[in-house]
Image 1: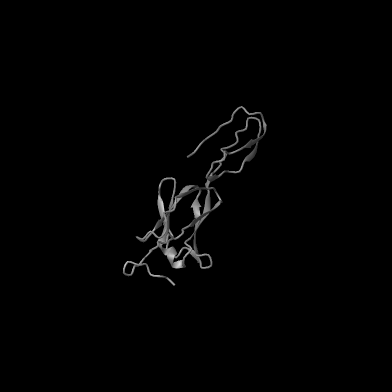
Image 2: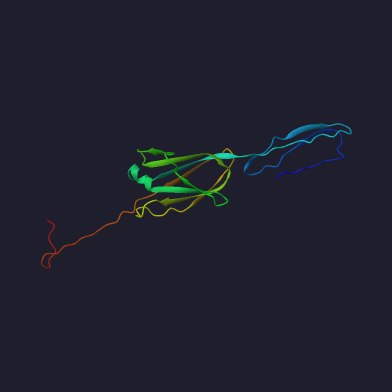
Amino acid sequence: KEGVAIASNLIPGEYHVYFEELTYYHSPESLRINVGPSELVGPLKGEYRVGYGKVDVIYRTGLDLGSLDVIRFSLIDEKNNRTEFPKGDGYQDDAATGSRQVTIQGLRAGMYRIEFMHTSDHSLYAPAAPQSFELRPDGQIIVEQVFDPQFGTIEVSTTIDGEVPNSD
């Protein structure tokens, strides 16, 4: 997108040109200019640069590190474009905390949503609610998710000839 502003019939002297701030962009620096009598100054250019940032996604299961392999997530942008993570070996595991960290560098500033999913058929972990965030230029976001195992229980009782055995 381009825009043009023209100021005419200016009294000779010093002027400041300020560029509007745009949410996901680095705005141009303001300009200080001098206008002399009958002088045309310009064209002056202000170039907005797209902002980028970084997102760290950290998730843990409370179980051994192998259990992290059944969990993946999609990063979804404002246009509903999906990118699945982790990619290849693009993550770091921490055995002490049972967690995995995926760092996404150079992500364009904007609104995003993360949706976690399980890659196996079992339902050891409850579904996680999507998490939304806004990434600002040069910003860093940390998204954390804990997956608590949902262990089942089997209770077995026995009887012998109609009596419940004594556990002593």
